[in-house]
Length: 179
Image (tube, rainbow, N blue to C red; front, side, top):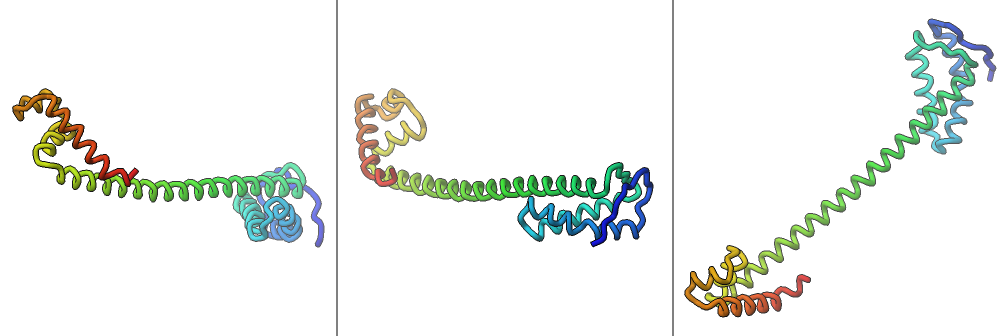
């Protein structure tokens, strides 16, 4: 491996031969540098290739005022840090997606349980004696007061209270297995 010394100062252009020479000389060092930080051969190779690609892509704009080796080490380190940050964001995104999908399943399960419970309650309400069912529905579904129900059905408020208490007791006995 031949060593290249020097700086690219005030250069408006990195020619192809210089670039190839820098690439061949410094790629193995930058690769090892990246590999130590990433501990993944493919990622290290990709990062270093991206560093060199960026240099080539900006060859008409770049002005390196330090040694090429130092510039490449800093560029590689920064690219590795970007890669690590990207990894963390990706992992966090995966965790969020996994959590979201788990919560979605839980919500769907809870919704199914609620539908089943509602259907069971409706079925049990329909099994109540007609007068008790009517009083219960007026109280709990139509949200009428005991006094309004008593007046509407021409019965006493105590009868309304008693019928609602009996309906609740009957329903509670029938649907306790849901809780």
